[in-house]
Amino acid sequence: MGFFFFSGSTTAKLDEKNRFVLPQDMRYGLVEEGLLEFVIGLGLGGCLTIYRRSDIEKIVKKFQEKQHLAKYQKFFTLFFSTLYRSTCDKVGRVMLPPHLKQIINIKKEIIIAGVLNKIEIWPKEVYERNLNSLLEGKDTELDLAKMTEEAFALLDESGEPK
Image (tube, rainbow, N blue to C red; front, side):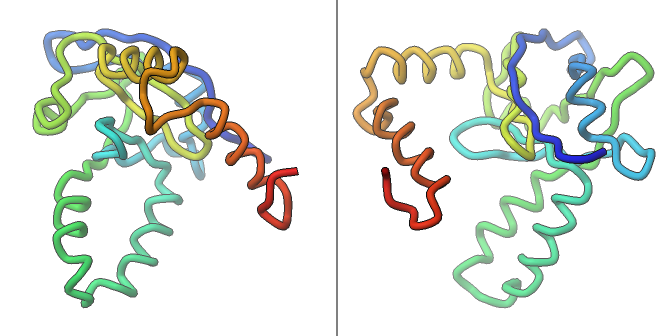
């Protein structure tokens, strides 16, 4: 497929069976070797994350190297016990496991956000609150100007801002 990354966001509603429609361009980005299969689990900061099959395989291989280190056991238990293999039906609906819906307190509406090599699923009210806090400068931990500067500094080989 060439170089691909997930981007953009959209609002979706869960139906009575906890399903939502995954945008078509995001579905295409999840197809590997002709199969639309992926893993959904807990993400960072109060969201769920959809991982490509190949990305989760890389994560598993790296974690297997550290599986006998006690300091990672609680994280591994939490991470892997909340991962679910999934796919889309013919119209692009994804079934959200009730356990994951409950953990991050999704009501009815969600924001589906493409973020580099993964897709994040946020309760709509949490996503909007985070975005507004960031844009209005209300969150002392999230300074948009500073975060932007630091992120773009990653593009410089030395890692220092220009």
